[in-house]
Amino acid sequence: MDDLVSADALKGMIGQQASVSGWVHDIRLLGGINFVLLRNREGVIQVTVPKKAVTPELMATVSALHPEDVIRVNGLVKESKQARNGFEIIPDSLTVVAASAVPLPLDPRGVTEANLDTRLEWRTLDLRRPESAAVFKVEDALITGMEDYLRESGFLRIFTPSILGGISEGGSEVFKLDFYGKPAFLRQDPQLHRQLAIAGGLGRVYDLGANWRAELSHTPRHMSEHRTIAPEMSFLSDERDTMRVEEAMVVRGIGNVISKCGRELGLLKLDLVEPKTPFPELSFPEIYGLLERRGHKLPENQDLDRESEKLLTDLVKHEYNSDFFFVNRFPSKVKPFYVMRVDEEPRYARSVDMVFKGLELSSGGQREHRHDKIIEQIREKGMDEQGLKWFTEPFRYGVPPHGGFSLGIERFVATLLNIPSVKEAALFPRDPERLQP
Image (cartoon, helix red, strand yellow):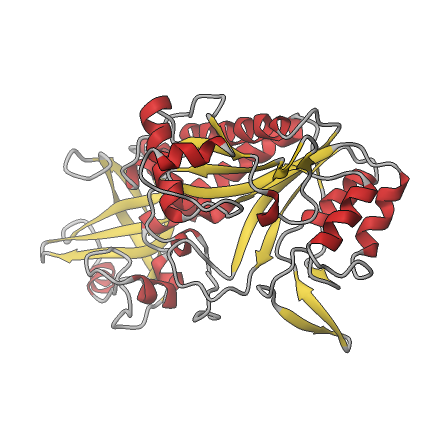
């Protein structure tokens, strides 16, 4: 367990013996005194090797080290004002546990820059960069905070199937597979099964898992596989109930990052603050006017385009000083069959997106819980009514008003940390060109 020893822990052990393991981050051979920077997942520790204080055998071992060799060091922790953490280890022994090949295909120190494709090709080496590892420690804290909020608010974590017997949202952006000789598909979203859990009376549930979209997108915002956290809740007043849950969940997640990830935020040169609630809300059809006054005409019955998202982001930042906002009441023609329409104005749906720094992070809102309306909207969308009977039949037997949302985890992390590509926030990303490692 000595790979978990941190600099802070060692500071409290000055004058004592310690054992620490990790990778050789860097070596400085100066003849009379040598330095080994040992890196583990808790940080970088200086091992100082004075020729006069160690055996010739240990000195020879140090002289033969290579970057990324795995080593174990036992020695005395000594105060040092010159060392980066205020202390150093003078070794009694240094053992090479696993030698690294040379030369390295990627420099974990970051001294030699590598492009994103090279970093992803050699992801295991890239993850040894403290800045790369910091992204996933932040991701863990973000998810933990969001899950803590949901559990404390009465949400039950469930697991929904990834293999579906039909397409839930229409379109062709699905991965097909052979399921014992029958056609099947990887899910685009755990949407319909969350609704069936609500129909089953579970009340408040959430799913955390992977989704797939077979879209040939080559942008920094898209991947073929991504993860979401997706709550669903029953007995809504309207779609705004989902907004209150989502913003509270987001604030709790960011708060947990601020509380638990000070070192990681320092590595990434970020100073986060908890966003203020409630998040601003912009709604259709008023959005058409807001955009027109800024010189952009969005055709009716169309989803927001990138220019619209940017203009609305600038508006919210200027008028509300917020990086987050909700877009509500989208045109019903661009939304799936399961979204509830506004009864008194059916051109618009009770559909909500959350936008953060100009990027859509989530989609959700209120679902249609009335069986006759669901069937009507399936027919209007030209979908396979029989093929969706497994989903629609339970709605004949009394389902409460309900709704929820699905928030993209990698998009959230990348946007929160100002990372230029969402692929950097995925451990091993999948896109049209990348299926390995």
